[in-house]
Length: 595
Image 1: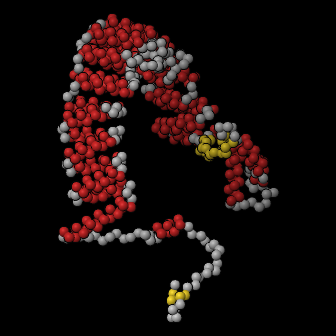
Image 2: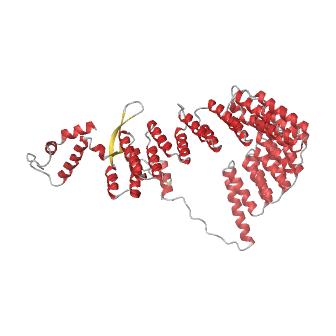
Image 3: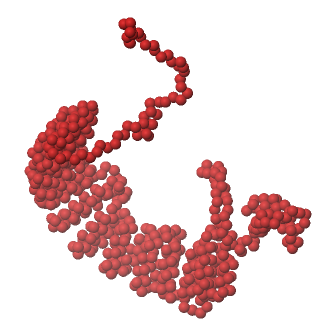
């Protein structure tokens, strides 16, 4: 409202909007904020560093900082990080009372914030205010008893202060809340560290642990319990705990559920033998364990072997043999046979070893390792014929798990005996079963290693025979391996002409394409792969000649193009080649289809 010279009031005119249509380019709030951030319109330069020279300036600085912190808290009261920064700043100025006041004000806002309690207590501990820290931890575990971190730090502080009684009291308060298993283990480890174990209390601890977990099949808990009892317990009390532990038989008759449980029996037997020195009770423990295991479904070779070794330590060899004999009769396993054979070998009972190997091979006739060990035993005993007979029986088996290893062992055996004719015979028999390239190479190298006349000629002949045999092999890489081994042989032992001969047999590496089929049988396109074309094979495939001529034609088209196709490009070429140069399309299509 404006006043005129005549005293009358005059209302100013409102500007009228001429065009009320929306603008062509609309600007959103998000775009404004993004442009402001990109142009750094709201960023302020950092304040200059100030140097405080007297107390008046320091007081002014503190006043300004406190005012800023209080303003932040007033604006965002529920943001606990503002309170923590404020308190930490006061703590950095050694204003402990002010920092406490800030933490207490923050707890009034959110007393269930775990970080706030931790920072508060850590500040008191850092400033060595032990009683204040203890008071804070006590308040924290009272308000939030399910936060294990409070209990761990509380007990750790008491233990660092060497207040063992106070730490134990905190642990006992913690256990009343029935925490998880890790908390119980922490309590037990604490008691073990200070060796102030009250056994009545320890029993109560582990019994409570088992009851709380409601799982007597928690065998790891039993192991810890027994280890604690064995450290300083009475034998009768330890036996009682072992009996209770082994009474928790797994619910399912599956071996994976018994693997941890069976070690309770093993530890029980070892305790009776080594700690309690009760031999008869040790034997009873082993027997009870073996009666409990369902041997028709599975067994544990470790128990049988430990029982037999126990009898051997007592020099009761007959009982040990009966135990191992019963084991392979009830539930034959490779580990049991090996343990029994190892025992008889140490006792130098070789006839028994032979019988055990025979039983072992009746159980697993496909086990090549057992055949080789049996033959090796006969060889060590100097009975070469028996060893050779074992090998012959082995390679005559219809099914073997590692036949290549067995044949190699047999060949090495004959080479060691310097029976070179037998070795050659073995190689020939092996090549009748397999045409693997490694067999040919090994055969050629064997002939080269034999110190005899014409050894290079024999080895070269094997390479030639192998090359002829592998011509029909689909795996061209194997044939290439043979030729490379032959080439290396000729480089060392052959003449220049022989080296050139092998060089002419080396294949040419070419890139080809083939169709790819998906899992459902549909076409999935083409893929490129590398193949090898051997000169000997190329001579028998006329289509390769057509492809070679196609390459010649392409080079001629790129170079000196022939304009008059009615005139032969080269009168010396045969009829097919001359037709090809006039119109190569039909022949190229035919060659690709054939390939």
